[in-house]
Each structure stands twice: as structure tokens, then as C-alpha cells.
Image (cartoon, rainbow, N blue to C red; front, top):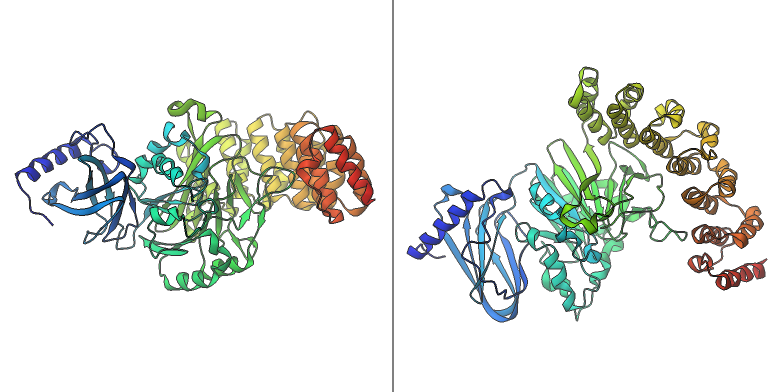
Length: 615
């Protein structure tokens, strides 16, 4: 620790002046002009934050060549007296400086000196007491290139004042390659110099003892493969991808030891996931009994994962079934959008947007509120001018008095307050609100109609499904699409006959027809095959794709000749691939689905001959 000199007093005066100028900025960031930082950058990897706790934090960086460094830090509060403290770091390329004896829940400014150059930032220590918190979730950023930093997403994220971020793994393409890591740290430089990112090792980070750069560049609380920490009112457990199948004992002991109200588990591979859109169902995951038993036992609120490059959020799941009050929400933050067709667990899948995206969570005393954001379609090319859109909004609650109060006040709500109440009831997936919301689909105000239709989609209650079917002919396309998606999630089997005409109606919107095919498959599978075959014969484009997906899942051995004949004639690669997948399923064969669906005539005929030999 160093006492103040005249030089330090002048420096602090500059710091405080910069702080005043930055007072309107999130976190009161110290100006990067402070100290007239030299243009020449000595950093191979700029300073970033790791392993924050209530009384300590780690600052890391890498120089271009071995050189000594120094970290100076001070409390940012204007009333703190401006005491500057300093820790030296001996000559090295990779520097790791652990700062201790800090005050909990306090913001500090810091300055890293390296080869007569300066990098600056600020950080806050973790709270020692229970209180609401705010954090971000990012996943699978390895393929983002410079899209993240060229967009306004970093500023958008930091404007929400997260206290830290979780990364679900796959930070780089090959973690054994030293030269790939600067791109990752450069991508998140503006974020990670102000908040720590706690990262779960993904499969692309590898686990090579010789070239273990993930371990070199990261410091997790408790280390690897298992890590855990508390932050405010929540507990977090992080598991490396190598130990997800072995983590039950760790999670059981770790979760049993915490008394925090909210519990989060983070790792790379999904437990529930629809996978990629394609005929081979790649990366589809339908549960993990060993892990789920621990999640259910300890009432874990959310599982945060990546790996599959989609955005998907499940309904709360407990015991392999939807349980809105007691279940665990599974969030796939896979870095991109455009997943497979929804399954029974799917509350939200994002489509038709550009990568990248992120999620933001506010963990309050009585709820977890999640909002996810991404770029509009084509936004990668627009950079800073791309519009940021909300992908998803969900509220996790435990006390039913919270949504009930909102529902009770709905009749008296007007204007913006009404729209806000409708949105929040939908975000809460509060089933008892569905009948009240259904009435708003008949009002004259289009904005209110659409808000209610979206809320009903998010609630997905079978109670109002019968009242939704007539709205498949509504004049507003947005309402029709939300209604169709609601039926896909929650249609009672007895309504199957009423939706078939709309599936086969060529004048109906294709997205509506796609969702209704899904409703038939999930809720009345005994009817699905014949209707899907009819849609394959009479439909086009995405309707035929969805119909082929239904056919491949519902065909029986008796249907094999029809599938083979259709496969022989099919020109659309996706549909042909689905038909081949269906033949594989009913005959327990292993013909390569992707090649079977190829459009090249010689490749297709090769696989037809293979199937004919099996006959």
C-alpha cells in the first residue's frame, strides 16, 4: 500500500474530474483519455477481470513480450478520500494480479501500467449480503468474428448495468491454439474490463494438458472442472463440458450446502434441446435423468447452456413434465438463432434474425426476469445501425400472489398499463390468466389484440384452445400466427379435426400451417401421418418441409413402400433427407441421411439402390 504524494494527488484530481464527467454513463466509467495513454499498444490481450468476490478480484492481461507491470486501484466514491493502492507484477508475458482486502459491493477504478503504457477500467466487488442482482448470459461466440463489437450490442448490454456475465463455452474454435485467444478477448474487451465473465469450458476449448489455454487465461472460483459461487441472493454452479455426465455428486453436495433463494447451474451441453433444423435431428436432446434428478431435488431455477447454435427457452420442467411453479427452466444461449421445430418443452425458439445475441437476467426478491436481445435480420451488415430487437421475455416466480395481483387488476387497467399487465402475465406463463386474456382478442385495438395473442402463446394453456381455433381465420396475420403457435403447444387432441382444414388450405399463411402441423404431431399423432402426407402432396416450401418432418417421425413399417417411392421421386433435398431418416427409423438402418437427401442424381440413385437391396 502506498501513501499519497503530490503526484498521486494530481492523479486523483484528474480521476475525480473524469468521474464527474462520466457520472451520466453506466457505472461511472473512468475516461479512457485519462493519463494520455500512448497510442502504441503493448498488450497482446488487454486487461480483463476474473473471479470477483466480496473482498477480492483478479486482473489479468498478456503483454507482447515479457515485461513487468503494475496495477493501481482506488475506490471510486467521491467521499472515499481517494486513497491509491498499488500492486506490482514481475516481468512476464501473462500477468495475473489478485487484489484483496476490498470492500464488498463497492466500485473501484483501476489502472494497469505495462511498458510505460496504461489501460484503465473499473470494477465492483460482489455483495456480501443477499440482495437483487443483474447479470448477462452469452454463449458460443467463437464464430461471431467482429459482428459483436461492430454492432451496438456491447453498449446495449452494459447500459443495463450487469454485475457480471456467464459464458456458456466455445469461446474459440480450438482452445489449444494460442493465436485464437486474442480474438475472443478483443471481442469482449469493452465488457470484460468492467465486469468479470465466468466461463464454462466448452468442447471447443478442449481439455488438453499440454495446450490448456482456457485454464491459463481463466480463474474460476474453486477451479475446474467444478466451480461455484454466491452473488447476492443467488447461487451459481459451473461444470466443465468434460464432467457434465459425472456432475451429479458435485451438484448434489454443492446445491445442498447453499441457502440462497435462487439457484442456477451452468454448463455447455443442453439437457433439453430441439437441435438444428435438418433431416437428421442433430443435437436434439430430450433430457438427462441423472442430472435432472439433482435439479428437481434441489429446486434449481434455471439451467444455462450453449453448444447448439440456437436460442431456445423451455417451459419449467420437473420430473420430465411441464411444471410452471416448481420446474427448472432450460435456456440455450447458443450464439445464433434458427433452431429445429419446437418440441413439447419449447416455450420460445428464435428465428429469422442475425447473430449474435445475449440474455439479461434480473434476479429480484420475488422473481427472476429474463429478457433476451439480438439483431434484426440482416443486422450483421448494418453494424452499429442495426436495430436491436427483443427475442424473449420471461418471468420466473414462486409465489402465486405475484401473478394473481396482476390478473386481479387487469379489468381496471387502461392504455400502456394494460399492455404492460398483459405482457407480464404472458411472461409469467400464468395459466389462470388465459380466459381473461382471450377476451382481449375480440377488442378493436390491434395493439391490444396482438399483445394478448402473444401472451396466450407464452402461457400455452389448453383451457382456451377451443376459443382460439376460430381465430385461425382472423384478418390480422400476427394474431393468426400467435394463435397457431399456441395450438402447437397446447391443443387438446379432440380439436384435431377442426385444424386439419387449415393445414390443407393453400390460402392459409404458411407459418400458420407449419405450426398446425406441429400441433397435430404433438397432440394427435394418430392423425398426423395421413394429414402430413396430404400436405406433402399439395403443399410447397416450408409447409412441405414441416410435413416431411412429421412424416419421418410418425411413419410405421407398413408405410415404408410409400416412403421409398416418394423418396425416389422427391427433388427437394430437405424433404428427401426426412424421408430417408424415416426409413432409417422404421427399419433400424444407418443410411447417411444428409447424403441421401442430396440433390445430385447419381448420389440419390446410389442410396435408392441401397434401400432396394434391403427390400
